[in-house]
Length: 503
Ligand SMILES: [Zn+2]
Image (cartoon, rainbow, N blue to C red; front, side):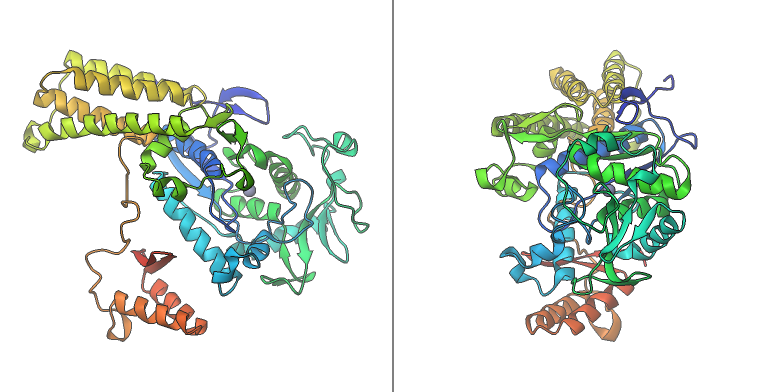
C-alpha cells in the first residue's frame, strides 16, 4: 500500500490540509474533555468520537499516537462560554443543586461524574487516551505558568484575581476570528469588572477563600481559571507544540483562543499546528435542551434498550465537520445496520472457530482482493477529512459481499474475519473492544487477600458502611489504600466496582 496522506480540516488556516507530525509517524494529540458536574450528553460524545476517529485512522496508517484528554474538575465557571470568568464554578453550583444533595462534597461529585463519563466512554467503544489528566492534579503547573505570564508582562494581578492581558498578544483572535476589534464591537456579552484593563481580558486565577476547592498561590487562596488548565496539561504531557488539538465547536471561543494566547505567550512557540472542531448536534431538528425534553445522555438511550454500538454508529454516521441532526429514526436504522455487521461477524466466526490455527492463512483469492479493495476505500475516505459516511457505506458493502456467498470456505471466512477486524479497528462499529460495558470491572481474582487479610470485596463493603455512617475519613482512606495496592474503585448507582491498575 502506498503511503497515504491524512487530510483534515484545520480551523486555524481554514482549509483541508495534510495532518503532519513533528516526529515522523508519531501524532501528539490533545482533546478537551468534559467538565464533570453532570452526565456528558450525546453532543459532547459526538465531539469525543471525532477525536477517537482521528486516533483510529492514525493507528490504521501505522502511526504511533500519544493522546491526552483532560477532565475538568475545577474552574469552569457558569458563564465561561459566553464571557469571561464570572458566575459560579460549575462544580460548586452542581453540588448545591437538587442532584448534588446525594454527594458529601464537591470532590465526591467530581469523582461520581468522572466515573460515569468513563463508563459511557467505554460503552461507546472509544479508544482509551494515553493520559487523562485532571485539572485538580495539575494546579502547580498552572500556577507556574501564570507566574511566568505575570513576569513576562502578559498577565496582571487585581484584587479579584490574575488576568491575561489580551492586548499583549498581537495574534489574539487568529484562531476563532474574534479579534479584539471585533470584540470591541460587542461580539460577545461581557461582564463588567472595573479591575480589568479591558473587558476581553480573561481570568487565569480567581481569588476566593470561600471556594469549596481552593489552593494556596502567590496571590493567596483561590482556584485556576478554566482555560489555563488545558495549556498547562497539554504542555506537561505533549511538550510546547502539539500536532493536533481538538474540541467541540463550542470550545473554539473563548476556550481555545485563550489557550493559544496563554501557551504561545508562555513558550514563544506555536501551540498547535492543526486544530479540529466538531460541529454541533441537534436533536430532531432542534437545539438539545433539558427544557424541551430532547436532551439525551448515553445512559438514557442505553436504558431505552438501544445498543451502545448503534448509538456510536448513529453519532459518527455524518462527518464531524457537518451539522448533525440526531433522530430516533436514525438511531433505529443504525441499530439495524449494527445488527447486520454483527450477524456477518457471527457467520465468519462459525467457520473460523472450527478451523485449526494452521489452516488460518488467507489467500489472494478474488474474494480476498475484493474485501481488500473495499477496506482500502474505507481508509481512503477516513483520510479524506474523516468522511465517515463513505467509510461506513464501505463497511456495509464488505458485509454484503460476505453475506452474499452461499457457503464460506475457510479461506473466505478468514478474509471476512480479517476485513471485519480491520473495519472495527477503523470505525469501532462491529464489536466492543476492551472491557465489556457495565460488566463488573472486577474479575476472577477477587478472592485474593489484600492488606489486613481482607479481600477486595470485604474492603468495598467496609468502605460502603463507612460512607453510610458518614465516616468519610475512613472511606477515603480505604479507597486510597486500595489505589496504592493497584485497585481503582468506581462508584455508580448500581454499586461499587473495581478495576486492576498497574501499581
Ligand atoms: Zn480545553
